[in-house]
Length: 169
Image 1 (cartoon, rainbow, N blue to C red):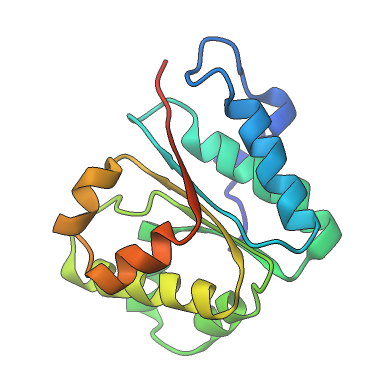
Image 2 (image 1 turned 120 degrees about the vertical axis):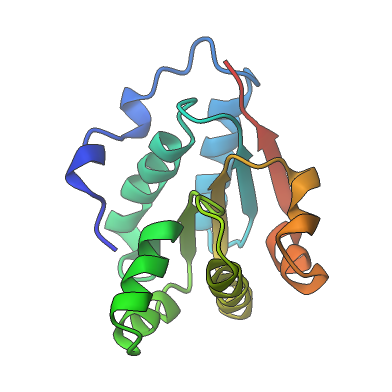
């Protein structure tokens, strides 16, 4: 998916790092992206309240990476992706996603309550895992709340070698 115009300003260089906790967030993002560039497949999970900047950081990471490994990376707003799948359930959206073998950024993982979305999330995680892609996920829910939304299998895919960073102001 293409980053929406409302988020075109989202770069890592424009993110206000001061005042965000943990203070090591910038270093952790840089370490994650260095691993992606080296072909490693780290998982990074950013959680926190609405408006803290998770999407900004996720898009910034994607935009920094896409220039060097495109089309092997993709950014998806999960609720929008689910909407598009319902409108057009054909394979084009999945084919684009399946080409992402280096970096997958899943924004707003559970941005909406829907059983169909939970099934799509499980498939997104499975595909990224099977593609051996690095994974950056943003979500409002805390990790402890995953078991209410996902199967154990999907949780295992999401948390495989994951660095979990709860963000707060």
